[in-house]
Image (tube, rainbow, N blue to C red; front, top):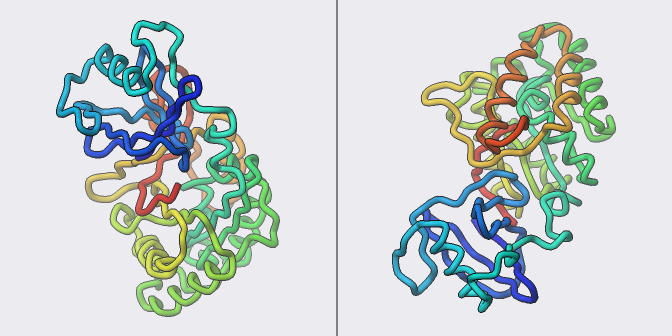
Length: 308
């Protein structure tokens, strides 16, 4: 994970890897995080999750004490500032905030069935749209296993509009619900065709291991192959019910201000009788994991590939 830090006229990039902190560059090229000089909670600006872990080490300094006092002294020394200055907090310039990172993203959200995208990442989609991102929904089946496909397709389009999407950016294919394992090549070709035309900078899709539905796993695995040659980040959104050891996320998007839109979009899938209580509870748990102070709501993702 890379982090842009700044104090006064000084700026540099740090990388956290396996619990150690390295100074790798003095030239800003990536979005990063924020360190407050006293608490030293390090936030990924685009993820809003504190992520500093100990022990910490500055490149060339050896393994050192993990206390906040040492970290403050080491960072200020690296910046050639006075370690005793109370107001020498290190902060991100306004132009490098998380919202700016989300600006102008091209996000391809892929789901196996109508309602999958809204339940997995609907709040994040609404937040991205507010940041002037361009979003496309690709749903691979009409979900005829859960209701009449025409009805489910209509519900999916209505849900996308509630989140703020134009119907021109909603594509619903007709692969057989619960039959994806017999259509690997065709599904791969369909995703690759859409991805090459849309040119996403970020892709949201089903996880390939934690899901309990073979259509979901097939969608995730075919997505990875279909976009393998594209310069885009790939994130797995959280399934409503995770199989095996559960879903252990790397990234959290704060959806406190967009949760109600997500719920409204999910409610548009009237034929499915989806649990709003489960959605709210999951958002609350992920919000607590993201930020322990205050009432925040979040959606969680696992990173397959992240390009900053």
